[in-house]
Length: 266
Image 1 (cartoon, rainbow, N blue to C red):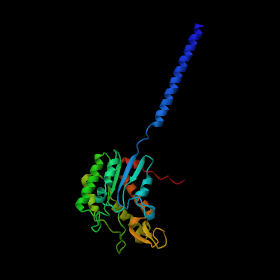
Image 2: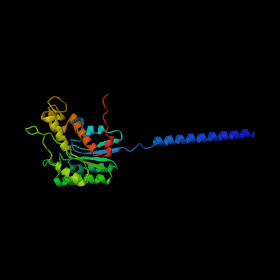
Image 3: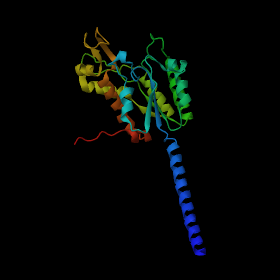
Image 4: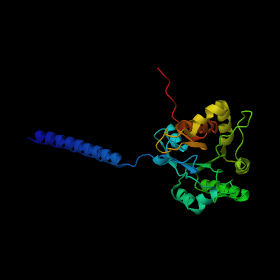
């Protein structure tokens, strides 16, 4: 009888241990299921209409930031804050930069591309050269203070050719961006130079295929047609985005490791 009792106690002890093990396993599983997902790398884009997300009423006009967002793996989230018509001055005055700062975290990235509206004296958002440099330095300094990484870009070029078919420089403020990048020792992409080279490769006629050029009656958003040598169509935006990605790889930043590599054709 005593041996039967002892055997029963041992059996109960084993069951108790097993039950405790199963309970702990269930609790662990539940805790894992409620655990926060891994923090994504956030990439902020700040700039003007050449980079911004477009409303459907402007299609096929496309900012290069739109296709750019699709070239990264699931660990990266691109937050495009660029806005049409903005200069460094108006971007700050409208509290758009403060909005970025409010959500910017360590290890995030900020791509900074201004110049189109800053450099034109007839525009309401014109920014004097010394102000322009000071604003770029503010973006960089604030970004670094948050332990995030600033990447400075010269403004993407407009399309302009001389009578001999040579693509022309169109941005008087590009040299200021270069100066700030050198002085502040930050990552720099000369998108002005790269885009000029792209237009030259296409040539005076074929380069129109990159821009929002439309004949009358072709698109419902532009029934009277459109000739725009500043803003891209979908093809042009993708070509510019790929230039940025090529230059990004050369910077050897961790972000480059998250660029989705095209799969080879079978």
